[in-house]
Length: 295
Image (cartoon, rainbow, N blue to C red; front, side, top):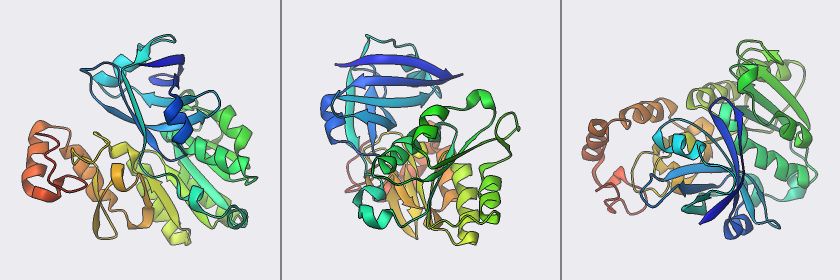
């Protein structure tokens, strides 16, 4: 059992929990994710790691209520425990593999949308700990849905907050702020965008025009988290990939977002899942493609 040390509501329908998971905390890096189950019969929910403390042996997760499983999770309190807390899974952020001195020469921009702020935070924090100051754009529909602003401000080089309705910070979409910063003379060597699929699609469309290499995290399309369900199958540069086992980070300019979003909608129904399995055959699953994970 994995004890919940802290549980709080950040905004309407968005929750933060600090969980005691010593082995996960010891081994995880920014960009990776975990899978939780509230009890032995509950669904498996993949969640990107928001923060971790190796000394205390804790991992922080942030989630939004999107279904029955996350509704049950939201009702857990400090002192309760998860039945399963498995990880770290997925590949760490590409920054972890790079030479720190070379990273210091780069101008890095992060773009976070909604709950995507949670997986952006550990990457910016890790860079900050290496002495690298990255610019961060955090976008939200309204001020009331903004999360982790103070935490992000403490580790970002420059933080730009924008709301769709103009209720706080800059007014408009995150793409407008990217355009504004570039027009103000900012030059970026790489952009990392994490948030809703539609947001990442239009960020990538813009950064491609601006000539800024862009990394995206496809954690929003993960369901099973092990490559067995076939939900997060995506085409990247003409090749079939699975977000949970090959990612979750990919070159955003190579991702077929339209296909991924269409698939996301089809997969929501039992009929749609059956259709995709029949259509894709052995390639429906990740890994060997023959695991029969959803039988």
